[in-house]
Image 1: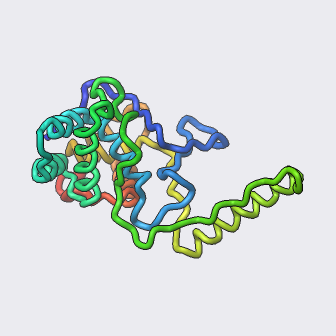
Image 2: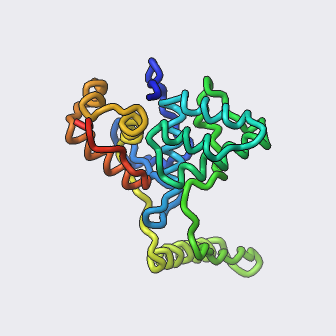
Length: 237
């Protein structure tokens, strides 16, 4: 079982969208790349999970980097790596395998495990299932300053955004999930990968008054948003 770093790492998630209008110690964050997501397939939230995994369990990153040192990529080694971390979802296996191949071909893309490696996680890696058909959006028309004043064009852009949002809803997309506490993702990593029980996590969170039920609910909700199958129920309490 991997061990968590002795010092609690600072969770720096570069891909999150912070709501500046939210007042409080924990800004509201959007677990997605954009404003909408496809149901049960949210690569943005999964990207955040992998970032958090790197930050909380640097050993996981080091082992994957070792696989990238091999001359030929062995999918079985990647599968064994994922299994050792209690990660069995296909999107993790596919994304990790693609990431190893990127590291093999472009050594400059490799992160430094000792220097906030989560910042160097390529966004081009597809942490999601294939979706068909691929969605496309009409581009807005350009502004012609010779025949249109700026305020009219800005009004057109507002209507354009509303039209795209309406189309997204009609296609079955859902508003991106929002969390008030990004620490929930860290709890999920600690429970899923490190095997910590809800009680262990609660006792090791002295700066916030939380109980086992709160932590359990947060972990399950976050796992659902990410699309992560939780490990066996034994020992959760």
